[in-house]
Image 1 (cartoon, rainbow, N blue to C red):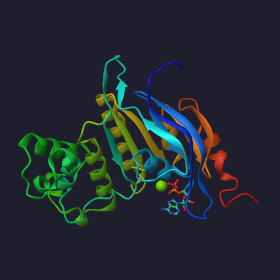
Image 2 (cartoon, rainbow, N blue to C red):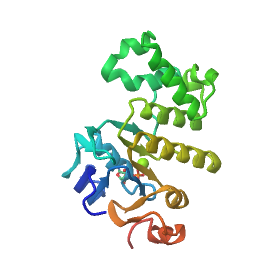
Image 3 (cartoon, rainbow, N blue to C red):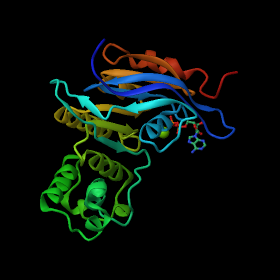
Image 4 (cartoon, rainbow, N blue to C red):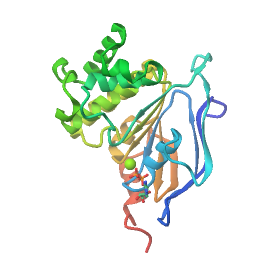
Length: 253
Ligand code: ADP
Ligand code: MG
């Protein structure tokens, strides 16, 4: 939409791991503030590599990904960009409780010892519990070590943690991958609703075309590291999108 402010600008992002095939091949697009963009693509298309590169966990071979240090809100005000990342593998600390994992989002501000010794201010503790409640965990589950939780519950803990620092930019890497379809929809709804409340910009990777069409303002499709589609989410049919990458998923002949 023309001159809308950009939160994240990806410019010719390219990544090759060792001697492997190119994981990202000159990918360029920008996120407009407040938009919910779905990064859609089959397994191995480069989604995680792109999201991890955006937070500095992967170093690009060439090209750039810039997060603007400050972003204009839809109301026109400027504020510092805070990133909340939902990792595909969860990357939770197994021995800590769900609530401690959510609080660990505050480690940069508070240090680990407060999380480990439960010496954080009560309002933060309440906030962590509220977020866990919002993603559907009971109080009893919130106080259990995450190694005792199911895959789906762990995934929801990861989402709660990403929301803990009131992010203005949410990068979510397949946040519903291990959930059953009904729960996946619920969690996507929650993510969209929360992002709207925060006025946050979202880049959410998915491999399910139906979910992408239902939730995205905009859909960007990756296939074998290349951007092959970029368009508005409304009006795109899941079938036409699936057709984009059904053909040679095993590689070009
Ligand atoms: P997606 O998240 O869409 O499933 P990935 O970004 O994980 O895709 O992977 C894209 C490509 O890069 C795949 O071919 C994958 O094998 C390769 N890849 C990803 N991470 C690494 C890594 N750390 N080392 C080597 N190859 C990798
Ligand atoms: Mg991935």
